[in-house]
Image (cartoon, rainbow, N blue to C red; front, side):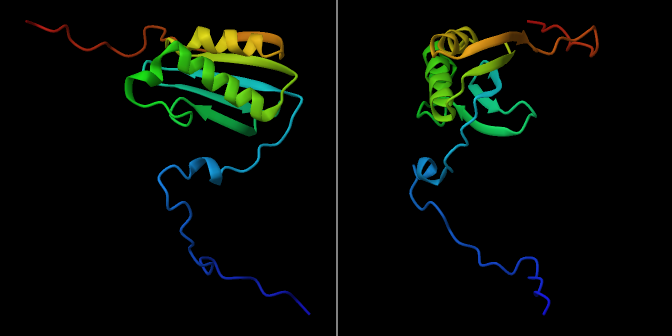
Amino acid sequence: MAKAIPKIGSRKKVRIGLRRNARFSLRKSARRITKGVIHVQASFNNTIITVTDPQGRVVFWSSAGTCGFKSSRKASPYTGQRTAVDAIRTVGLQRAEVMVKGAGSGRDAALRAIAKSGVRLSCIRDVTPMPHNGCRPPKKRRL
C-alpha cells in the first residue's frame, strides 16, 4: 500500500522560544568536524564567525550579538576574540583554512584567538572585496 503524501502547510505551527534569551536552548548541537574553513567577517559594527566543512556547508556560526554583546561593544576586539573561541570550541576543529573579510577591529583579535586555540592553520586568506574603480563615489560634502 502506498504511503500518503502529506499536504504542504499541513503541519501545525508551534511557537518556540517564548523567552527573550531562548536562542541558546534552541540551537542544535553542532556537528563535529576535524577539517574545515573558518570565515571571519569583521565589519565596523559586528564580527561574525562561520565554520564550514571543506565543501562549504555551514556547520556552526557565531556573532558578537549571540555571545551577549549589544550596540557598540559588538565591534570591539575583545568581542571578536570571544566570538572566535565560542565557534571553535563548539565544533572541535583540528585543521582549518581561514578566510578574513572586512576591515573591522575584531578581525585581528579573532585571528589571534583562532591561532591560540590549537587549530592548525593551513592558510590565511584575505577575501575583502576591493573595487577596481567600479562605482562612482558620492559627491563631496559642502559645508
